[in-house]
Length: 401
Image (tube, helix red, strand yellow):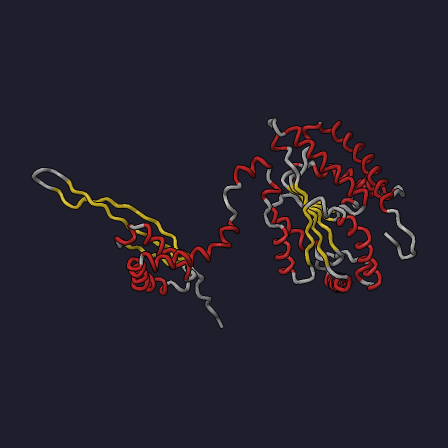
């Protein structure tokens, strides 16, 4: 890498130093935790999302959405909040700097909390090369524990970890505009609190008021956090999310990035057992094509039956459906003998599907006495079938003036 001065920056040397420092920190903290809790109690999250983003990219706004999408129960671990913890304040009050060791030690203790067992979101980690190297060591150690305990009663407590790196990205101009807009909104809010005495003041960053300070904050993100997260691109699942649009657009981008990847997230033996069952998306992709094929086949191979089913839909079903147009939910009962043939029922369901309805059929059998021979005492019984068809569709929107 060449700096603007023309001098070569020794990135490899810096990486080596970071790796060595991370090893020292990791080994020391791991030894402490193992001595305190015991090796079999060092249980870490199955899924870890590393959330980073440019200033103003909407990390705070999207954190709750991401956690809901992933089904995480515990609150996110916000690294900046860890730095304001009583432990960190004590260090700062002594005039000391909060370094990687202190941050990592607090984070490690957080990660083994049982509420994070299924998954956790780390907001603002990693930010330095040392933290990147620490993360690699931690994931390797969790994998070692997985191998160690996989054939024991504790196997489910030591699962193979899945790491997602998610970066919400906006351009510099957009970042500065959002920071300044946030500053104006917070400033206006705090003024209202002062005037009315209602509510609580919000923290107002200096960078949210000064365009140059906002620009500097973005540059620091690009030079430090961005590089740290980019270095993990080839190692873990990496998601670069376009955060330029509206909240709804960004949420849609996030969902696309977090689509289920069973072959990567499940244990190999679990995946081998279920892989024969296709994904819903795979079935849905071909559903329309297959529906058209079936309808064309009915018209050619079962023309008479197909026409009869269409006539019944027109005469019997549509009048009832129209009466329930507001609710979008109609129920039709029929005893027509044609539906005792499975092909006719399939036709009914497919026709409704092609026309935008969802039809669900319940087949009910009833046995009844048709005749009793008083001389012989013989009872003649008959069976009939009643088909209960539920038809759902988008109901009419009632407009009120």
